[in-house]
Structures are given as structure tokens and as C-alpha cells.
Image (cartoon, rainbow, N blue to C red; front, side, top):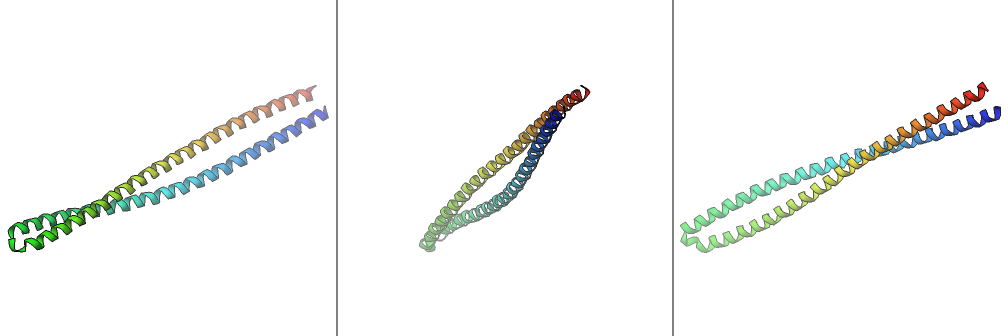
Length: 166
């Protein structure tokens, strides 16, 4: 009976060590995931800041583009009003049109970069959600395992009590 009791105690100790080890691993996994989450959130904030910065630049380019379009229109009116300055005005219009094309090209590049950043933010959000789900699943498994170990322990204690009674 003492030998059986000793073996059961050894089993309980082994089960307890396994449980403690699993708990420690889960705590470490949770800390690591929380750290990764913080890193992702920081990265997301930086990306949001960059997107906002690019949006500001796009707005500035739009204002510049509008101003250039207004200048172009004014130049065209002057061209009609001043026949003597006709050749000079034509060259100015061509220059302004070239600037407009360049600004539109820059605007398109900025829009493409914004779209890329939006996709990156969406991907990071998905990664964060996946990490949160993974932590939840690990916690659920840990809780389930803890319940199982507790049940096994109670069964062993009940068996041990039965053995003592005999």
C-alpha cells in the first residue's frame, strides 16, 4: 500500500510539474504575443502617421494643382487679350501644362503609395486579430488541460483515499 501510495504521489508530482511547466510556457507565450501586439500597434501607429502625412501631401499637391490650373486659365485669358504677347503666353501655357502633368503624376504616385499603406495596415490588423485569436485558443486549451489535470488529481486522491480506507 505504501509503495502504491508512493507511486501515486510520484504521479501527482509529475502531473503537477507538467502542469506548472505548461502554465509557464503559456505565460511566456502570452508575454511574447503581447509584446508582438505592442510592436504591431506601434508599427500601425507609424504607418497611420505616414499615411496621414501622405494624405497631407496629396492635399497640398491638389491645392497646387488647382492653383496651377487657375494660373493656366489666367494665362489663356491674357493670351486672348494681348495679341502682342501671344508667343510668350503660348510658351507659358506649355510650361504650366507640363508642370500640371508632373503634378498629376506625383499625385498618382502618392495615391498608389496610400493604397499600398492601406493594404499594409489591413494586413497588420489581420495579423493582430489572428494573434489575439491564437492567444485565446491557447488560453482555452490551457484552461481545458488544467481542468483535466484537476479531475485526474481528484480521481487519484479519491483512489488514494480508497486505498487508505482499505
